[in-house]
Image 1 (cartoon, rainbow, N blue to C red):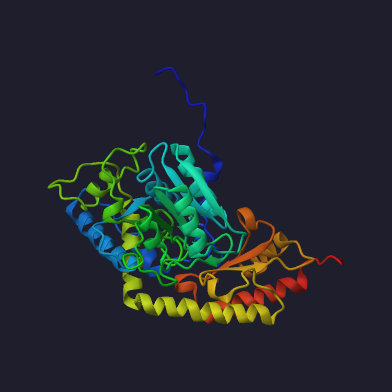
Image 2: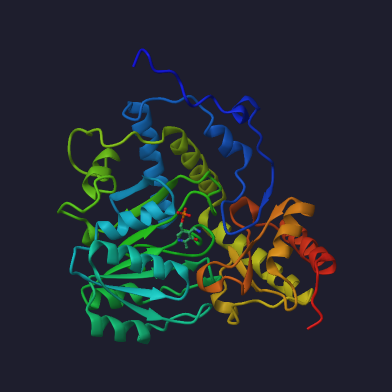
Length: 388
Ligand code: PMP
């Protein structure tokens, strides 16, 4: 190798200083990270096995227990985004050949089904049109027909803007000896949820939505019933390894599994501290009233909400029917260009049908609603409108 010369030169672009714009992050995520949380993540790196990081992880664990309203010992954060928590939940509860039931009323049920299929699960779905929900009768019928080991439901279906009711479903799952898995990536902290009282067995969320932390950590919790004893197919997402790293098990020592993203843990801890200061109920109420104010404002400027039933509108992510005669992509680009503000189009089954606006955590305020409404009004005046 002494006689080998470098064939790949350092790229010219890396000689330029890092440039990052400051934007209004009002899409379905990530949301804006306030200075306090950004600064927490800028503190010095320490070891992922130092006593001080274990202390910080323990604080995070208590914060998640409050956020989820659970006493579960097996509560921690996955080193990765929401998808990693989703796979952590599914890999640790589904064995090849297991029957799995997913509720599909948007993209998240589809993704959960695909993950379970990859492990060799026998997957059945109950399907509702995008924007729709399932009744407890629909769910019970499917549970008794398919006898699944696991039932997946998205609490906040961010592709369609639906907040799914949860009451009674955990009890139904347990009547049929099935674990209840709930995705609350888009809803957690912005809408009421009580993990233990609602008998949810596995619950996860993400750091980059209501929590206003950078993407990259994903809180998760497992009930006693859901605790895995055998080895799952994934090493990285192995429940037993992860709960040992997070000090959730009764073993006297923690063994190195992976290098925890310590600075991401600092930000997550700070974001949980912010939420604890406001209080869950105050946060739920703020998201609810700001969303109602937003939805009324949208109707005032002639836009229509995609979810007809007010009771099941997700307060964190709003879906607006793509205005007739316009190209939705032109609207989102125009608003980004002229207002420095991100809103997005649809995703999966709602692609092309909707615009999506997320007002999560610190972004959920009347001031921000007014800003989005004036950006939309401006876009409707200036974007090309076909005569049809
Ligand atoms: N579930 C829901 C409901 C989501 O909104 C998202 C993120 N849009 C995810 C899962 C996946 O999270 P991530 O993008 O952080 O992997």
